[in-house]
Amino acid sequence: MSSRDESEDLKKPFLHTGSWYRMGSRQSSIMGSSAQVIRDGSISVVLCVLIVALGPIQFGFTCGYSSPTQAQIIEDLNLSVSEFSVFGSLSNVGAMVGAIASGQIAEYIGRKGSLMIAAIPNIIGWLAISFAKDSSFLYMGRLLEGFGVGIISYTVPVYIAEISPQNMRGCLGSVNQLAVTIGIMLAYLLGLFVNWRVLAILGILPCIILMPGLFFIPESPRWLAKMGMAEDFEASLQVLRGFDTDISIEVNEIKRSVASTSKRATIRFSDLKRKRNWYPLMIGIGLLVLQQLSGINGVLFYSSTIFESAGISSSNVATFGLGAIQVIATGITTWLVDKAGRRLLLVVSSTGMTLSLLLVAIAFYLEDMVSEDSQLYSIFGILSLVGLVAFVITFSLGLGPIPWLIMSEILPPNIKSLAGSIATLANWLTSWAITMTANLLLSWNSGATFTIYTLVAAFTVVFVALWVPETKGRTLEEIQGSLR
Image (cartoon, rainbow, N blue to C red; front, side, top):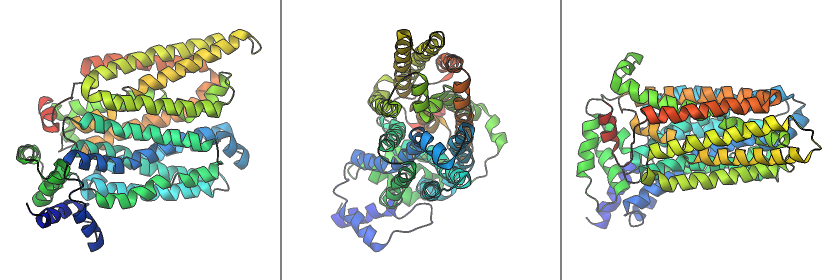
């Protein structure tokens, strides 16, 4: 193939993002001159993943924002604890609306187009929070950024799963959650040095970088194939796999997979009654709901408050340390998931979570039995800190990244838009309930709160052992065929 032909082929997949924008000649020439750089398909896929990972970083920044800013916002705007709890939980309400819309948006204008749309309310939301003079602007901003995050939380794992080769899908799919944890850690870190208004302005940066970055990556080949865009589909896949790679086998597999799915077909709830549809949906919903019922967002959103109640001084520094540990643990999972498999990591993760949450619950129960002046009080505070760190580590080893990965792998293409929206909505609805109640439950009884989370983690072990299939080393088409 000549360099000119290669350059022209390279342009094709970059020119399409759901038929709603076209790159100018300048961008096209840049893409053509980059042909030699991304000849290796694995490099091309990694670059695509790194760009869309800015979305989950935004997701994580939203989750982490409320922890280091709670005291400042309450003082500056004269809010009560319950009013701040509403603020913290409103991102989940917005995300529920975004989740409902996410499947159809991603279906009709493509994965890239939906991420572009998601970036806009995020930017407006952060600006509203930064300039808020009362709770109304604060709440509106939180709702808007939540809406964008709801779209991001569905679209990014689906896009990564659809562009990744089977031997790298677990690793690259876990980058989604790794990016979330990086976003959380950045919010914790920057919150040590800047006030809440400046921190909100900094929250805009991931989406500001993401929007132009989307012009430089190809659309999902599986989405293009489903939309009947055969030429763009093959060109996109060739860029992702490398120009020297024979993609004929994968092209035929994808064509067979989407052959029964008509372009822009209307999906009805009655379609979910078939076992090949409801079974993977049940697994996806189950994992995403259990992920949130473990209490992780309650811990991350209000970690500074939890550390203070445990008697830990410098709670914001401890919170940043927790975020850094989460990033490291999730990074380890990214390396392990294609080697150890999804099921094993989920079992190890949920078992570890059960034990660590039990330790936290016992520590809080014992702490209530002694006076704050006692040496035992400090010991129990350290035990609760150890338990929380172990909880975050074990969560990050499996139940954090893998539910989103499995959801994106097992949902059949003909129902992915509807089923994916339902599963994402279930996740955000549960997250809202946990975030809304965590502060109040911790004020009521910390030991009892963590006992509830312990029981959920124990049930997760059973759920994974009985129902979750192993998807390691199989193509998306093979996984969906095995569930029929």
